Image (cartoon, rainbow over the protein chains, first blue to last red):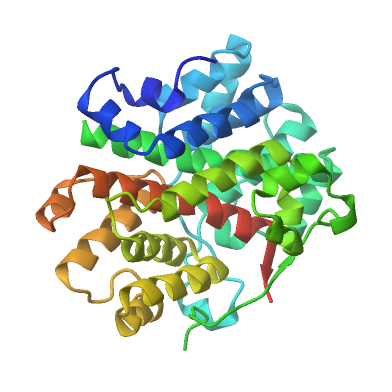
Length: 179
Length: 181
């Protein structure tokens, strides 16, 4: 785990202007990396699969390959195809606040039904909700994860993983734009 | 006619947080600030202490690091704009209050809440809000040119990027693990 994942995926070389810029905020740099290590340090295949799915939803093929490379290649390819088929632009959704109904933007409600098993399909369904229509998140969505075998602790981890990737991918994408 | 507000809101979890008396030394370390043990949000996130700790340290540096770069008011403005786009009423309430407190520009902040990211703003805030909104879209996009024209240097731009990216993290936790109360 010695490589800095954001540097690696944003193409930031040691000693470059962007490297120096990132080092002006050493704690931000360090804790972005430690967040990655907290989630992926044990290289759990279910969490890597979820990360590959989320990165493809964000149209970030290099990030998706980074997470998918520790998976079985056939599975990685199925996840890529599934996420590409489910991909759309966001955020959208209906507000839970009735006062904001005039701003509701309705869009696709994705339900994973691929060859990934009930547990992973539930995670992919939840990830799509969080990435693209987070304002439609609900207690029922959490119950669906629990029914598919995710413990309460693991549901918190799944939420953190999807949410962290929404951060990491945006930092990578913007730093590439600053290069 | 909007649910977006600078008033103080509560937040109720949809999953059971750890009880205060269940918190071990490892949990308390993950909370970073012990006072956060009173918050059901942080006690729920304490179910995965490793990522909570790293998340919290990231948050603190992105928003509180005062060594140059983007002024705090504008980091909070970016957080508010992201929360407005994603639809996180709770996050928007907290960070719009901070934006107003640090900028003393209550009406401009309120216009962002009332009219959304498209509402009129002066050029510098316009550039910051537009960049935060573009980065919040999925897939995200980013163009530093209008920010440079508005007078932001690279450190300020990097601070804006991190504040906006971080709220894409925070919004998804707040929106998906509970609701404003």
